[in-house]
Length: 114
Image 1: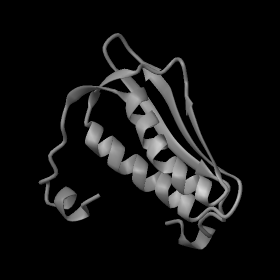
Image 2 (image 1 turned 180 degrees about the horizontal axis):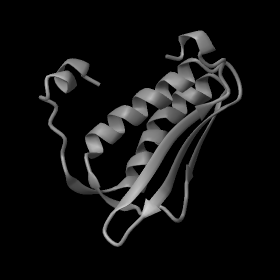
Image 3 (image 1 turned 90 degrees about the vertical axis):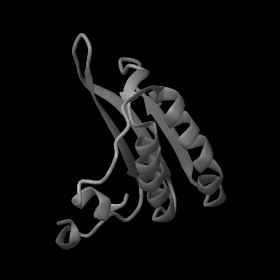
């Protein structure tokens, strides 16, 4: 992400309807060849309780997900990378959704996590 734009308040965020399931599936499909080339398993878990039709910025979701999952593949020597999408809260017209990326890589040393 472009931190200078964020800090300057110049980052434009879209608010358009899009299919979150389709977007995450497309991201996973783009990353599968990289994962396979390293002998890794790439998993996508989309919780069935999570809405698929959402309003937000699909380009930013794609950018962040490809960055996080791409880094997970890059720093994982064996095992798997999992992309998980789950609904944390759901109201009549809104939802709080968590998208996470987990891997079996070495991780970040505790003293560097801040």
